Amino acid sequence: MPAALRNAREAMSKVDTAWLRMESPTNLMMITGVLMFKERLDLARLKQLFEDRFLAYRRFRQKAVDSVRSAQWETDADFDMDWHVRVAALPGNADKVELERFVSELASTPLNHAKPLWQFHLVDNYAPNGERGRSVLVARIHHCYADGMALVQVLLSLTDASPSEKQHKELAKVWLKRDQGGVLKRLLEPASAGLSKALALGEMALDKSSELVANPELAAALAKDGGEIARELAVALTLPDDPPTAFKGPLGQAKRVAWAEPLPLEEVKTIGKELGCTVNDVLLACAAGALRGHLREIGDPVDGLTIRATVPVNLRPLEHAKKLGNHFGLVFLDLPIGEANPLRRLERVAANMRELKKSKQAALTFGLLSAVGMAPAAIQRVALELFSRKASTVATNVPGPQMPLYLAGCEVDELMFWVPQSGSIGMGLSILSYNGNVYFGLIVDGKRVRDPEPIVQRFAREFDKLVLITLMEDWEREIAAADAEATLAHYNSRS
View 1 (cartoon, rainbow, N blue to C red):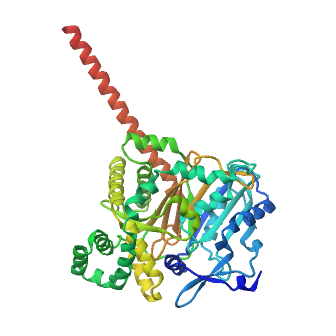
View 2 (view 1 turned 90 degrees about the horizontal axis):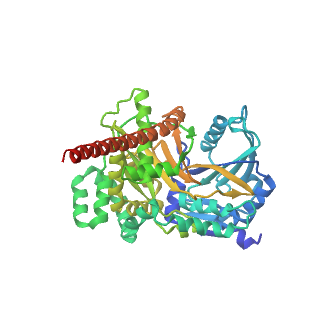
View 3 (view 1 turned 90 degrees about the vertical axis):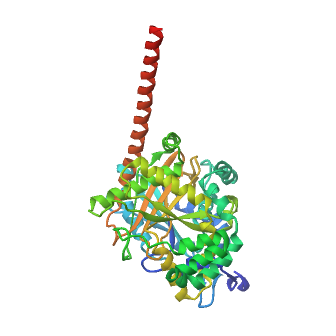
């Protein structure tokens, strides 16, 4: 490698710098993904695939170098593919339980900051339900490299539409075309307006954040003078802290992950259509119900309880995600945990989502993150804690391709991922659709939730409740229609 290339450095963006510096022992800034295959992957072919396609993104040969003043990208002169693509084996039955334990351990283990901040771990003895001869690929990539939507694009660049790899070039284009009009696009349009103003307001808010929290009059004045985005800022900064629950409190350093059996996407769409809401609304309402059930089981009070989730919102056209980097904002979504009625809970989630789609919260938080990225470390910690106190979980929903994917000639059977939590947030909800199914996963701080498995098992039960409600409403309509028809027939016979 030429000396000029070895020593080349380039500045890291302000937002990427913010994510680099957010890392703490209790919350590692890694995006963790799991790809389960129907057969066994060939290691040599996998490494060649990474050489050809993953490293086509020049950024993944670079390591993050942070200093007091700024952060930079530097090409790793000692790059070693064997370090970044590792082989592992599960103990015991090598089943789903053992895989979840393995992923939990990786999610709790920091990446080596002396090297590019990513690793893939090939598990070559996965045996779900005793079915041997299958592989799993566990990915860990630091958030400073890219946001979730960009990494979905990276994933697509590694996969093919057939085992022969001949349709590789068409795959991303087909998926992007099909995804137009999806939930991210609908959230994108109102949020992306006024980004330049949000950047300026973000810097101002960082300077005055402590004053705004302590002085509601100053927040009110900002809301009056600063226009719509400033009003959003005043609302966001003066939100009360999330209430203390089993999900909210001191964090440890061990993460626990679990994921549920998939739901058929068409069934979720049908229920959403019947109940007049979106697929996203249905899934988040099911997640809220699962969290409610857990709190009730451990004896925590739930009546009237609402917790917030921070929801990442993409702020760029999907086709630009391949440029990597972080280009998203965050919105605060109320989850009505205290609502006992599943239908009312769904209606409240849907109403909350409709309000967020009108807001500019996402653009605002993007500006704040940009400002955080260039602020001194002490101010970064204050800003991070200020926002993380206002939520109990991160919730992500990514619409994946509705076709089978192949990686190194092997079909991807299931997908799951988790984005990192920041500050004092100790839980992450992940929803991903792929090839006709919806996958729900949970990552929790082990100090807050010892075992997340019972929570994810409740997810399907909450969906079944909505199915039952829909069937009952259909049945009641049929009964009413039959009664009306009988009444009309009786009237006609008398006349």
